[in-house]
Image (cartoon, rainbow, N blue to C red):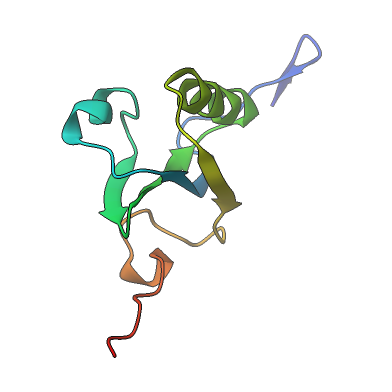
Length: 96
């Protein structure tokens, strides 16, 4: 839908993103990343969740920068991905 030259996104739209930062963040950071699932693994934190538009994505990236965190990767997951699906998680390292 377009109103006044600006594109409006309807509620419930967006893409699921996986954002990885260096460092295992504690639960106190959950407020900064509200709406995102946080998982710590091998010294990194994986944030997964639906981001409705580019301004929200850039806001999340600015928040990461403002907290002094090192951004390792940002990845848009396939359109049919759900944030909590085990198939969308990083593969486990095989045990030796």
